[in-house]
Amino acid sequence: MKQAPQTTIDQQIATRLKALRQAQGWTLDDLASQSGISKSTLSRLEKAEVSPTTALLAKLCATHQITLSRLMHLVEATFEPLIRRADQKTWKDNETGFTRRSLSPPTSQLDGEVLECIIPPDTTITYAQPPKTGLEHHLVMQEGELTLIIAGAPYELTQGDCLRYQLTGSSSFQTPRHSLARYHLFIL
Amino acid sequence: MKQAPQTTIDQQIATRLKALRQAQGWTLDDLASQSGISKSTLSRLEKAEVSPTTALLAKLCATHQITLSRLMHLVEATFEPLIRRADQKTWKDNETGFTRRSLSPPTSQLDGEVLECIIPPDTTITYAQPPKTGLEHHLVMQEGELTLIIAGAPYELTQGDCLRYQLTGSSSFQTPRHSLARYHLFIL
DNA sequence: TTCATAAACGGGATTTATTCCCATATGCGG
DNA sequence: CCGCATATGGGAATAAATCCCGTTTATGAA
Image 1: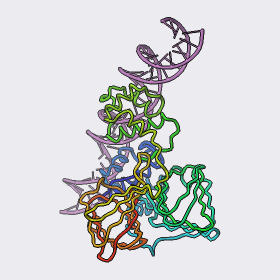
Image 2: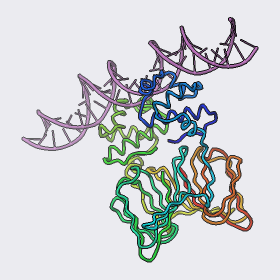
Image 3: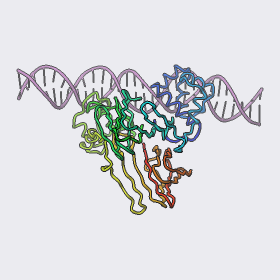
């Protein structure tokens, strides 16, 4: 969910609360009956027309199943804009040697995420199901060669090629004997 | 706007028409009065409960200021998933030597876009206004050094660093004397 | 061509969702 | 303790989309 830059803390809370509600698919009425807060108040809250009392926030957090501190954290958390190469978290699968480096890790305020992946030569990695269906992927080959199969269709990629797809089913990544594959993956 | 994968042509048209309407900020009523089509029909159209007649589509296209063929193109256009390095369009500013290569060009069906940019040494590029405000950028340095100023804040980037920001104001890109800058830019 | 069936369409009522208005309550500073 | 600003709840009003039903139009078979 994209949102315009906010200024005051109340506005940040407002948009966050609205997102929380809509994430559940609830209407103001739904939330009102569950939380015991009138929908009028909820409406004004989400439009940041009033500054909510802590008692009220506590009730809301209760129905949303999150702690007050977590809500505050969600709101305050100003994501780190710059992530140095040295600070990027990497994860390696020791079985296959597959390396996944998080260049731009997920944040509650951003919709996109960037990874750098390295697959050693002569390796096949298959995902039966996507973590979340319909995610948009842009894959940019940096180095080496890679065959991937998306929804049954095979693609042969070499350096500089770019493949876009919306992942809804299984996917398979395969490197040839003589070459690894290093690529950037932009997910949103 | 993200959309789940569609199956039938009517569903594709439906979501596209809805997007067109909402892009203008129009309600069903607004569009109804402008196009001379009842909002009931419009509602059913956008829910793909009926298959629109061509006469009706023509009226709609007229109010949306697009040709019927263009609408059909928008709908049918199945974006090219694979863009080979050799096929990627590049644009070069001969004044500054700034090169911009479109790795994953914009498509009506995708929200993200990928660019590879190269700025020669000792060059400064300044944008007073973003093309569209609030766009989310993920910049990954590939090679060289770059100083950029986003909303007044300066950042020094070297190979492998990643900078994320939502562009709302001016931005400035500057390379040092001794080094160019090559980077990937993910925009959504 | 004609008839039968199915589907699209328009008008208006209905439902759903949010915002506005006003009265009441609750803090907070002097 | 008083007064003022502000939050809150109830309910009315508005906004927006959907549903229902009668009418029209297209399509296909005889």
